[in-house]
Amino acid sequence: MSVIHRTTLTPTKEELLASWLPSRPWYRPGAGAPQLTKAGGFRLDDPAGEVGIEFMVTTDTAGPEPVSYLVPLTYRGAPLEGAEDALVGTLEHGVLGKRWVYDGCHDPVFTTAILALIEGRVQAQAQSVSDTLDEGIARSFTGQGPVAAAFTSVTDDTESTELTGAPHGAALRLHRVLRPGPDTAPEGATGHVLGWWNLQDGTRVQGLFATLSTTTSRD
Image (cartoon, rainbow, N blue to C red; front, side, top):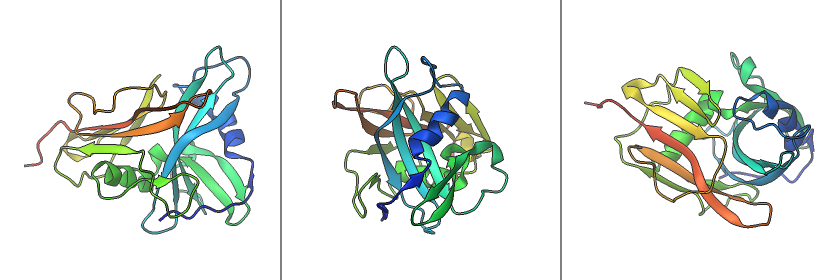
């Protein structure tokens, strides 16, 4: 179960993301630099206990309307070889020391963990409380697992990030620009993750975080 340390982060996650988000194709520019606040999210466990895995929702109020983004992050105690382009930045953790922060879509520990969540082999953990499940996270899976996390391509568009190239035509889409929506999987999806976040007025809403699809048989 996730252990949350009550300590300082320098820079903060919001400060780190404020520098990184404008470089993303799915970012909606506002007036000036991003003005970010944490709006929700959850964590997953790394079975090896080495990598922190967080689904972070951050809301930017710099534009005419607030925009909430899904930013999956991984936290490592050393650089991830070959993932230089996926580095969000580094921060100093008051307990764990220097941490390298990556866009989780490029981290194999993250992709393995989210597929395990979709398939029901692991459960979502509370974002800010140790040893606590997040009962607000829903998931579904109608395929034949386990799905191999062997994605070879990561592509951003103006709404999402798609991971493709895995065996059996598996494709994983992370919905970056979040919108409240129905609590069911999209038509044709093999699996999905539904998460929650808070609007600026404190209203808690749900929407699609991730969608898994497969296009070929496993026979």
